[in-house]
Image (tube, rainbow, N blue to C red):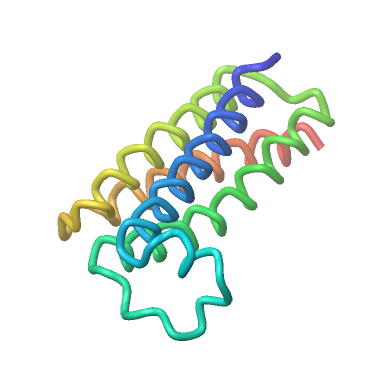
Length: 131
């Protein structure tokens, strides 16, 4: 398996962890039966859960773009030092972004968001150059 595909797998697993932590916090806040129900009348989520909900949506958006460029690169047989770097930067930036987002640290979060986007662009550029 290529490094790029491995980073995609790791990124999907990171997304799963984010979802599970968010769900666990929901269960601890509202109880299992309330979370298993229709969830129409739940109380406002805690600040941490709200952050994790936003983080989850953000990760979903970015994971779609990352998956597309990694899978297109793989299908096209494009794998080099730049694509490996791009995939690695994306994954590690998203790990840092998740931690920073969860703890609510201001200012620095966007730097890691843009680092992840940079990783996506690096891979896309390599695919376009080979087209």
